[in-house]
Length: 148
Ligand code: RB5
Image (cartoon, rainbow, N blue to C red; front, side, top):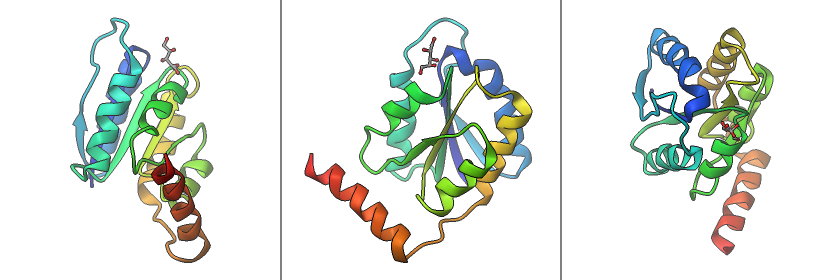
């Protein structure tokens, strides 16, 4: 798969390890930054990555900021994005299986590199269970988006 990765200044160091890890799993990574420690604004990076996912330029997206929350909030404002913040692998698996999440976010100030790798692996390996109640609920989320 082709995976976009984006982060703010808080995620620069963890991001480097995660890129190498995702590549070691056989995926292609598109890194859109930031690659600098200088303070920046996470909404810019969350939005840019989300637009790539929503536009089908990539298959899935991985976001990192201090907590994972700010950058996920920005990404979730883009139509068609379902991004969940995860601090452990079970949630990372379930947001693919049940919510058909197309982006995941986590916090570089919350999880260490090994846990982050477990989270990413669970997310990338899981598949949407499709159909039935899960699709119905995703359609309901999309309907909320379309009401705005
Ligand atoms: C930046 O200091 C920090 O606020 C940001 O990385 C993130 O945690 C916001 O949600």
